[in-house]
Length: 233
Image 1 (cartoon, rainbow, N blue to C red):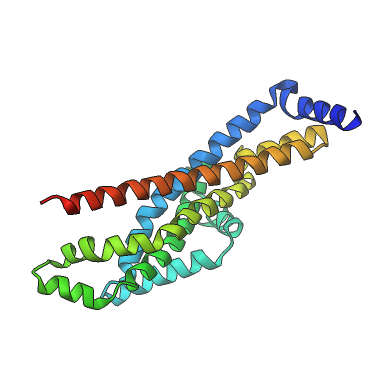
Image 2: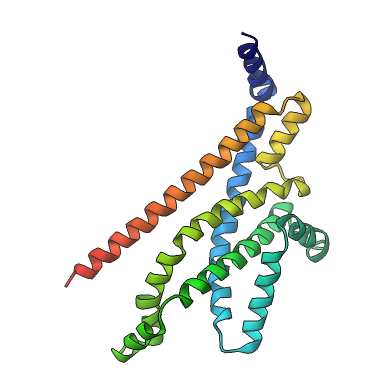
């Protein structure tokens, strides 16, 4: 009975008392927004970096390689401090905007490496064969290279969303009320971190699972659509 009483009291103090569950819900919303926006923008910027790394212009290629190498090697907390206290210190950007810029660049740098490796994995002979059949450069890329590269990169792409979501857990440095900071606030009031930490861990695990499933279903749907289109006369 002692354990049951403890759990009941802990749940009440951590979630119900003073409507503390609302802190977790609001923190969850902030975490979702930061993660999704950074990942979507990071995907677009990662494609741009990937194209830049394959550019014949040495300046563009060197710039993209230098930026991505720097972003990949620095920890997210250090990057956040650099942008918040140095690069964007004198701007009017909100803390949330600075966080999104930081995590977008971090995510884009990782994705550009994945995209570039996936593109390079396609045999050059396949592209040459497509060009021989009359495909333009862009047609050869989107109809020959892109489908194979997408298949190669998809497992790592899904993992990167989880990593981006995990990176956002450091935004409490800028006093952003994400789910991690919400749990910290509750724990500082109750001095009982067990229930809050269990809930936070479960939330991150659930979000990662849902994101993986959604991306897998989207990839499967696109794959089936492509196969159906290929069968059409």
